[in-house]
Length: 190
Image (cartoon, rainbow, N blue to C red; front, side, top):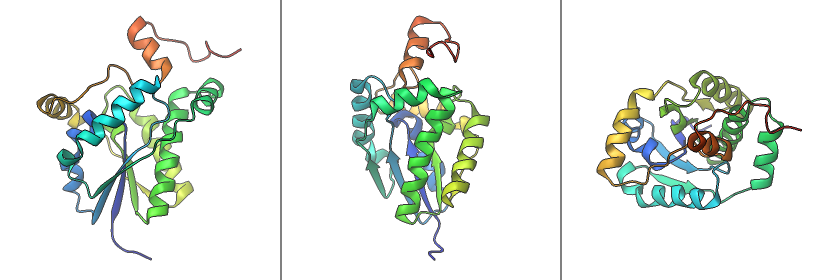
C-alpha cells in the first residue's frame, strides 16, 4: 500500500480554487491533483465557460495535474435532482462520489472540494456528505470549513481576470439567483 499522502481536489470553478490552492499546497501532500467534474452546471454553455476558465488558470494553481471530466449527463442529473429530498445533497453526493472514486482509482489517499470555500453552500451538509462518501470509497475526506479563503478567492480571481459566475450552477440555483425567489424543495415534483 502506498504511504504517500496524495490529494484529489474536486474543482467547482477557478475563482473558488484561486484563493485555496496555496493553502492546500501548504498541507504537505506528496501530490495534489485537481479534478473538474461538474455535470450539474446549467446551461451547457456555462459548463464550458467554467471548464475553460480552469484550463486557462492552471499555472496559477500550481497543482501537479488537473483532470477534466467532460461528462454531461443532463437527463440523469435533472432526474436525480427532481427525485431527491434535497437537491443540494444530491449534487454534492454526485460530485463527491465521482471524486472519491477517481481518488481511489489514482491511488490518492484524500479528496476534498472547492465547494468548501463558498459561504453560499451548506457547510454541515458538505461535511456530512463528504465523510459518508469517504467511508464508502475508503479514502479520507479533507473536510474543513474553508470559507476563510472566500475573500482571498474573490481578490485573486479579480486580479487574474477570471470569469466569475453569478450562481451555484444548477438550473434551480440559476432561477433562484436571477428571479430573486427561493424555490421550495418540492415545487418541481409531480
